[in-house]
Length: 168
Picture 1 (cartoon, rainbow, N blue to C red):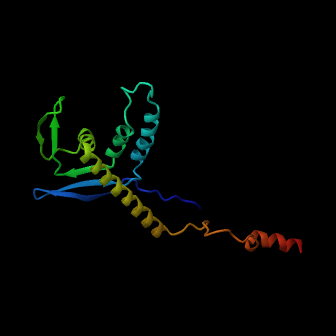
Picture 2 (tube, rainbow, N blue to C red):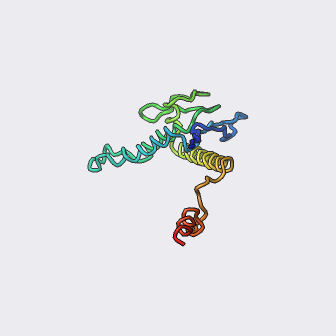
Picture 3 (cartoon, one colour):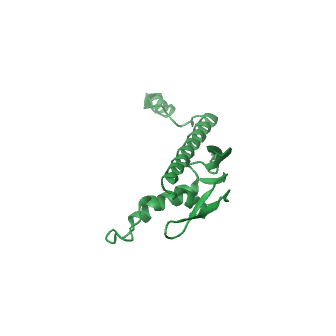
């Protein structure tokens, strides 16, 4: 009888990013094995390569497509404040404790140098969660019965022994 053990791709953890004015800025980050992230991450490469390379005015950088995928790894956050700017780049104001929405996630990830730092923080922790999950899964389930550490000795196989026993 065969059975399959499913993997949970929605594992997430809270990570403290920084302390700002006695408030802990935290992100709840999903594992890098989160299936919607994997799909959008692959699609980012396809969309980037599908652009018209001749029209440089409309060419978007790879990270434009990639950030949409990485925004899926942010499940929630606490104490995030966002500066809002007008079309000329002038500061309009700051929103405090903004909710974790798709638009706000992208605003944080596209926030210049800080956005890159947050992206790296999310990426690093998502990969660490995925590694931890794989390690725990392997430790819990153990090695599969048909896996090997290297080449097998064919002459020790029960089938081979039966064949040689019949011929003798």
